[in-house]
Length: 257
Ligand code: ZN
Image 1 (spheres, helix red, strand yellow):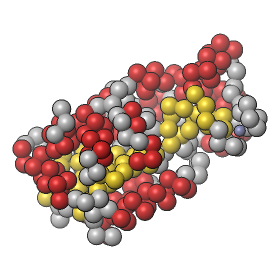
Image 2: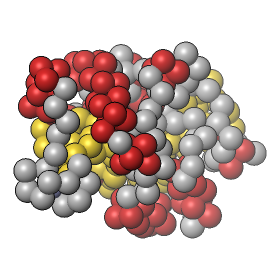
Image 3: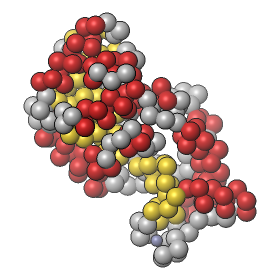
């Protein structure tokens, strides 16, 4: 049974510092909790954005122009919050740990791109649910900036299509009903199996298949530490559970203000 340590206390910081100091190839796994301190709401929480703007399922997006219009209307209704957000102390702490070589990569359920904006190289971020800060062609994968798409959509309701192949263009997120990205799933699995410390930060660990990675790491012999404001279903499997605010806890442990 895991020892549960309710922060803030120096004990929690010390536990985390010790875990990071003894790790040789740690992996950090992040969820909404690392970004809520940056003003990005937890979409799935009761009363969250998804209650008002229920996401368009992938099959519906493919099925009709009307649903694609609805998809982009909802996207741009909530776009400003993410566009205006800046990385928080938790993001900066993780970026510092990667820069020091303590952490090999960050696996994230978030789509806000804030790990990269905190300075983590793209090839060190595994985005299980994609990225909402840019778009891609669903056919050929070409990447598109959102600003021109937004301008054309708001001015004339124009739906974006690929200049290269004519395919449908959508935010680079994984929508409901869309296949999980194979390359990212493989990278996350490999990182989970290879790490000696698996540090969960700000995830409720309720969304599958993402929530399977901590157990995969644990069964392969890694130490499992969970840092979250609320209890998670995997707390009983963890070596340490730290409940508290993400930014202060992680910042203090990593020596990042
Ligand atoms: Zn294309």
